[in-house]
Amino acid sequence: MFTDFISLADLSRAEIEDLLDTADDLKRKQHAGEVYQPLRGQTLAMIFEKPSLRTRVSFEVGIFQLGGLGVVLESGQIRLGQRESVPDAARNLERWVDGIMARTFSHESVVELAEYATVPVINALTDKLHPCQVLADVQTIREHKGEDFSKLKLAFVGDGNNMYASWLNFASRIPMNVALVCPPGYEGDPEIYAAAKKDTMGEFTVTQDVAEGLADADVVYTDVWASMGQEEESADRIKAFAPYQVNADLMAKAKPDAVFMHCLPAKRGQEVTNEVIDGPQSIVFDEAENRLHAQKAILLRLMNRGDDGLCPKARARRTNGATA
Ligand code: CP
Ligand code: NVA
Image (tube, rainbow, N blue to C red; front, side, top):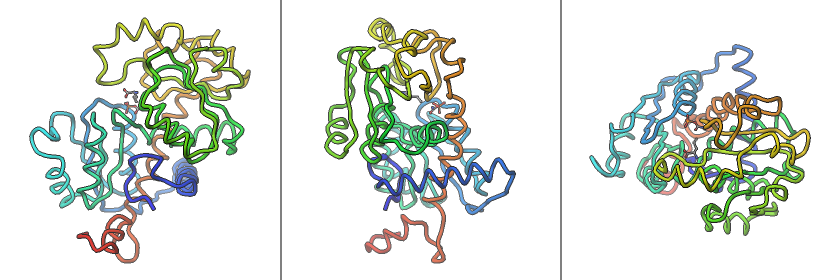
């Protein structure tokens, strides 16, 4: 059972499917105008070491819609590991709030927050992973392509970054065919690739050949060439990734009914052209909307209290004999 949300690889297939079904249900409720507030009176600390539009707004609105309150801590406020240690920050926050969402540079910071805080911790992007985005993206793919992921191929075009790693984690739980199409040297974290490959029946390929990678793709996914924190590498990356721009020619190499996806923000004219991102195959704003519903499902599963008054993490710690 997951009691924090750090990586999709920590969840079972059934747990991921439950989150997706819950997200669909929460979306239906929201669209029907139903007020649903099972987290009334609960508070979520939202730590940001990096900028954000989608994550900030969707989590703050999401916790509010569920009856709770988000407390935003902008970059420079806590200065994890500098102004005070990660364990000390965790042991303070848990005295006031019922959950912590964190977007950090170092993945270790989120792991350490989860280790030391008695309240649940949600990874809202680190240098290594962005699982909330993939959960929302999977909800979106189910809406457009159905639920049988074993029949789907996703071509991830560009950097083997935190988004690609999160897709590998997902496909290690719910098998699908994932092809990374990238220039040499940008294949990403070999450990995540090896672990996913070991765990799954899904097919993973890595290729520099655009035609090979895009062949039979149902989903064409891309992301910025330089992630947050890599701005100094931008000029080199623009040169390396230029042949991998998702434009009309590249899209034509995928299936005719392929969808185009991007976690956003996009650098229009770099990794994707206006023609594609604004074109009929693009579902990028459906993905953005589903951040709200998918994350509300995560908040609900992690923070909802049972008849004993405890959330799953506190209950698990009590059962294991640790302080809750
Ligand atoms: N996709 C995403 O996480 O967007 P933000 O960086 O704006 O939160
Ligand atoms: N790979 C990007 C994702 C942004 C949502 C980054 O880390 O900046």
